[in-house]
Length: 266
Image 1 (cartoon, rainbow, N blue to C red):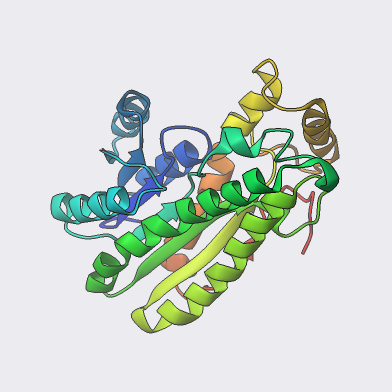
Image 2 (image 1 turned 45 degrees about the vertical axis):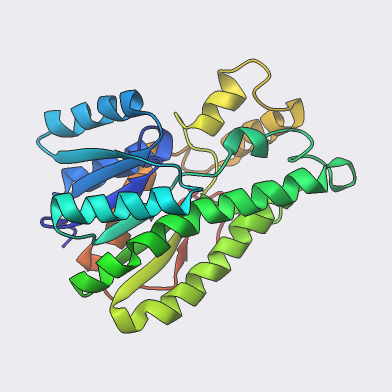
């Protein structure tokens, strides 16, 4: 039911973290996976894992905040592989900026100019790859879009004004797109995550000196301690995304799933 044989999938941010987990999972189910990112060297390590496991992968450079870049990635994917069936928008716009204390901090102390810029960048990073791929998905007669974003868009968390704004807005936008694109047999769903091991956020909090504020790190520690099923790994999120990308979810659109291990219940 969850086979992706014959499907062509673009995964933004597939060179590491959650995106890597998604790319590996889609490839393991038979999809041709095109990783879109800015660093060919990082992508090659992921592609090597895909190929070693018997899958098929490709890399196309592009900045998710650039419409020309995303247009080029979509067009070249279709040219090389015959079309596009799945788009997984996992990459953020500027994650390091989003972690700054004057962006992720108490509302009275944040720099709203920076916050608004982060909201714009992160929103564009999710929507542009989908808009660019849309003509090619229509040519295939349908497909699946999966947005990977933050659970902060569903659950109000102090100091997360920026996260709540761009993730919450993306969730609403995904429902608009689900309505619009249903006539094209293109399904649109969201996956909302919290702390995930081996992701850039995890590394910033626990492996990089000064990568996040002390308050931010303590929030993560509290999440880890409170997660009934433990902390997710990238492949755990990849399995949820793969289900949504597959024909097993052919009747599911406009949904928002939160694989948070019981930390949040909706």
